[in-house]
Image (cartoon, rainbow, N blue to C red; front, top):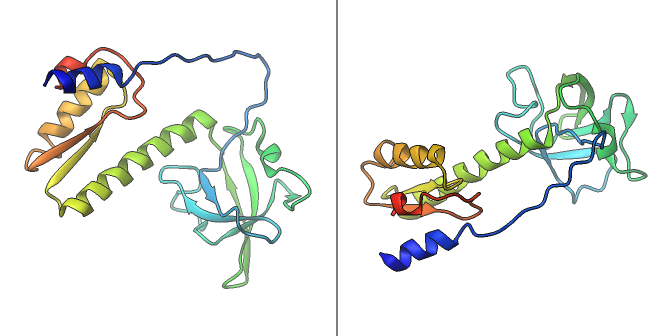
Length: 189
């Protein structure tokens, strides 16, 4: 138990630096993952991030859809498309879309999100995928909890999942990777 406690204690040791530059560029996100092996013009969508701007009931954007232009600017290999999303978070943005398999074209508007909001969605996706992998590999017998930080909110979430979602499991994997730090290692063990 002492060794496990020591591992949890040191698992979040580190330091960070965040520069604060006023009026800097801020690339927004459409809430999509792209197929970077696609060689044609446009951006081929590999997946739609759950909870993102393109995952709404009225959207027809799915994996395999090609974004041909953003706000009327055609997308090709001559420039980095991310510049078309600079400072677009929260602003209505027009996408011209194409599905090669059905030869169908249409336009949709989306409201891009900030990089921080996308990071939150990607974190939730990562946890959901880890939980599903543990469930699949254990035949549903082992639960999974990711402890995001060693703070009160994360401790409450971990206990909630342990005594709720995972109450009937034979064991629980408590994952502290990429943990933001804090001081609840003793309570968790």
